[in-house]
Image (cartoon, rainbow, N blue to C red; front, side, top):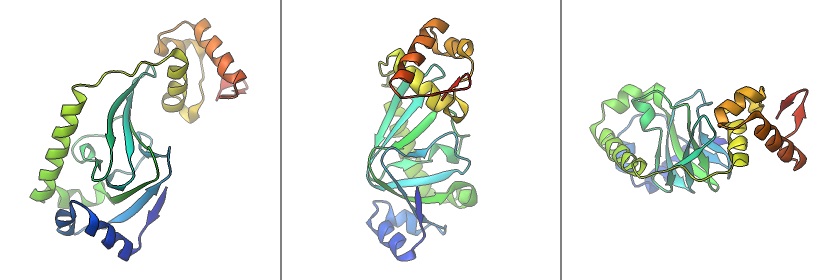
Length: 203
């Protein structure tokens, strides 16, 4: 991730935005954020609450259940909002946004500017429209069919501290499989070079 504070670049980017009139009415500190393909744009691990508007590129938003099952929530391109729910609700522990390609966003801190945001009717109107569209999409989603191997990889990546699996029995319970099945999968992906064993743990 790269943050850009160049005023001229920020002004030019906002001027191209579909929401430039509303953004111009907000007296807040904007900056640009750039992400590489595959980089997490938003995740439960981030401490800072950011509002971001996609200006170039695209993102995939998905939900990871405790058993590693992945739900695709949405695909966002230019003008897509990230952080709209964080203005009103605590951040979800299971929702991730990932750059599907090189990505540029107009960004600002929600915590720093929350009062300004909540007092701007035009901005709130945009948020209402965005959330309504997302809720409509979420009513039609279903879990993407995934193999146990894929669920194990997702579980390690998103649910294990430092992406390190500790405790076969406990992990097998969450993954809804037997400890023997899980051990077989771990042996296979270790042999394939996808993970490595670290003193009794898998990482």
